[in-house]
Image 1 (cartoon, rainbow, N blue to C red):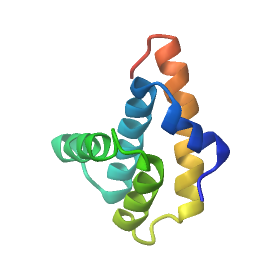
Image 2 (cartoon, rainbow, N blue to C red; image 1 turned 60 degrees about the horizontal axis):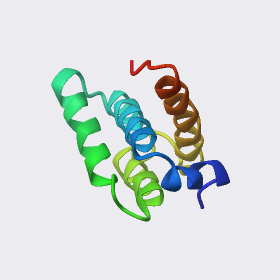
Image 3 (cartoon, rainbow, N blue to C red; image 1 turned 90 degrees about the vertical axis):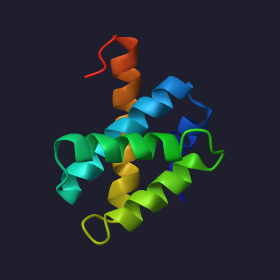
Image 4 (cartoon, rainbow, N blue to C red; image 1 turned 120 degrees about the vertical axis):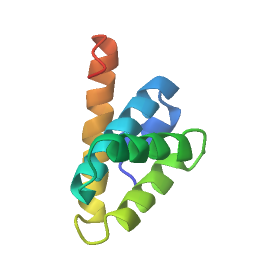
Length: 98
């Protein structure tokens, strides 16, 4: 079950959602021990696999839960996605895409 905040990502500006998903992909890549190009490729795949899907947020959480098998739980993943949604809004509002 997604939080109300995370559910709003589905209706959020696609740029915000893509930024959130990119950051989530980089976070997961770090937990998976991926570095450099491998980390960027993983994050890119996460963004594009869940970009235009109506159930994209739930599918993203499920995918991360599967990929991270036991490294973190679904609750932590959902909390991270909610935090990253706020961060993506902040970055894009301030023009900071770091």
